[in-house]
Image (cartoon, rainbow, N blue to C red; front, side):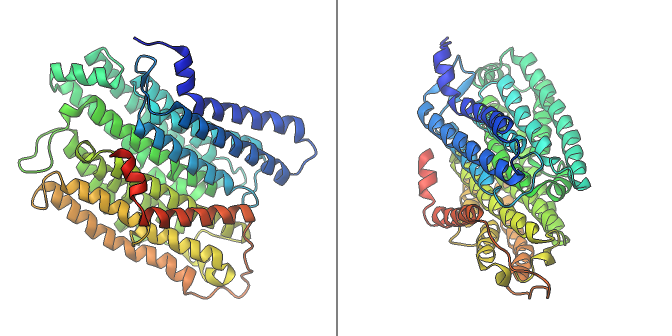
Length: 489
């Protein structure tokens, strides 16, 4: 067994850079922040945080895709590398939206917690052992609980953090209990070793209980139905930048580790959904959760007048689509799931960036608060149109090809005539239904007239560059999806 600490340190360069960056943010604010305004402290903290993100990117590229590290505790492959880069880009975009957009009484602490959350995301991407996976998930989760309740001036923020914490704590208990049962069955922590020992033992009732608990835990984390009840309140009450991180980078890292765990540790317990008869396993359960999430998310979004709650139910529907992609990941590879989750995260960061800027200029909770955005700020209206149309799956934006890649991969399981085909047809129909509530947002932003007293919106330069970059990224990845997908070929 290779237990080189130098190799372990190199593999964890991204996490090291992010943690040191968080400490540097806090230290510099303590030394240089006295007598400075909150805006000046926030600006310095954001620049230091972005520097840590850049260092983490270099660390991820330097670590590369070298296989198992430190006896299999971490696993560096192409999926690890691109997931690390993806969550770092999404975190960097979130930081880029802060200057001139948010008001925080404790800006350095806010940026530091974002960096700590990002370190949890990057560790989730590399984790290949039950214990490390749990620690990475909880490091990220605890940071997100803090971020959700960071706005102490709003009771809704405290309520969001409390609900998020309670549900997250319960999901952590399910996850840890499921992991403990798997360890009890196999005596192993490494995903590959678990797979080998489960293949020798076969499926047992205790293994089924363990897998059910793990799926329930990740269902809570991903806000998949029927474990979604925390999501609308958190999306509504948390600060916009916190919600952007919760809905983007955390989803990307979470779905990747979930996919790696199921297909890496328990592939022989998957069952079958491609054709009749169905074989019992975690695949039919995952397919059922995917359908429930898409059905409930899309229909519940139709009834929403609050734009944040609408986006929360939209996120539930998108979680269902990504879960659908995970069912086919063994045959189609991780590319479609990663592409879908990454481009969804990019669009979500952009949308919440637009909402944060509008909210700084006035109220932005109801869909009608976006009325006349094309007159108040053509830049924001144009970027919002790109982000919303990408979520709706309109070509040539990346959201369209993300859905196409996922649904095409599911059809490979058994064609249109099997259960997987029926599920894909239902997903396409529900995606068409989603066009209605997405068009409600665009109708207000691009067609409706603004209120008489609505002032023009000044977009901060840095935030404007982030929004333009995100919109350009969605267009580029939609036109050239092979740039991402060929990384997994």
